[in-house]
Image 1 (cartoon, helix red, strand yellow):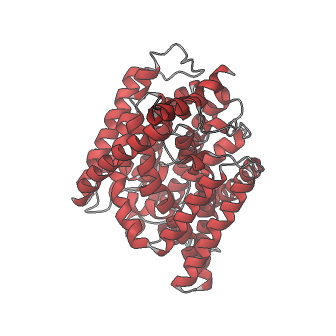
Image 2 (cartoon, one colour):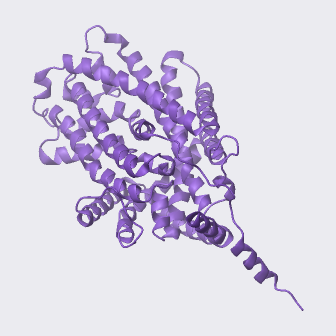
Length: 468
């Protein structure tokens, strides 16, 4: 006559579901998909990276070649994602790749570390950067700058909570306005570029030869970070089997062309030694254009405000989709996976990520500590390129775009990611190893908790969706 509460609980869980809605739907077109990639990638980094690349590569020619070859290096990765997301166009990015491959513990560690260690702190850095550039004109205090940063985060939070389509249109507009000034400036700069600077040999004592070119290419890596950002929202792209490959390939080609032209223009305005030594290389280069002169600083600051605003807008839009998808898969708190009944957006996920970003604006020391977890983010890329070997075995894997020489290319990408991971180790402080171990141990504990509590019910939801 005695009952078995534990057995009843298990039976109940097998029959229950986490969500009763159909989730986010496909409302975003090709232009917004491209805007997400360009909007995320083309940020304030280009203003400082030109100087760093000038210092690493040693000549104007190698600056242009570094950006060009750095972009070519990104193309295989974009082609890789074009195949994966023409077959499985779902939200979540690299986290979802692991989850679909059945590597759920790795998926959870990847998504949780991204949520804690990189995404919200990244939003805070962008917002503070915008406030800093505005300060060029207003000369406000540090505290005022923090409140300006908070205001920018709140504005985009409310925009993206209220509407997917509306947020996408705003992103289209901001991306257009951030690219047009760059294109105009690059065109004017090319007109005034001096041929003798572009063909000048390396300055005495500057890096030279193939080693210098490799150093320059390596220095462009962060400038291209974000070229595949649209994979985070693949589940909301219309006609994804066509538009995902188009967005990924067109974005990386456009960004490569833009960076190559812009860097060539800057290298043709200022001698390489001055470009390498400058703390504001773009502003100093533009100041040599007739009629601009002292206004170059103001022009560069104004451009930076527009550019970083676009990056912040794209990031607030796309990043919360990872935790949304984790919750839909039963690997995070269900509240993050809820779709707002009126606005049809992942409102809670967006709000929490923005709230954390605001917290980090006022707690920068904590943000710096969490930055040590980026070692885990670097490590996950190695495994991320190996999921294709699992997917290629499946009968339901039918990509409309196929990666050329997929075995060779995937292994090559994984090896490059491994080399980049070793490179990160070379400059990362020793304490990063401790944080790597902490992330893995806590990640496994967290995975077991969510898997036992919500995993079965999430699988029930997904099973029902496949049957409908």
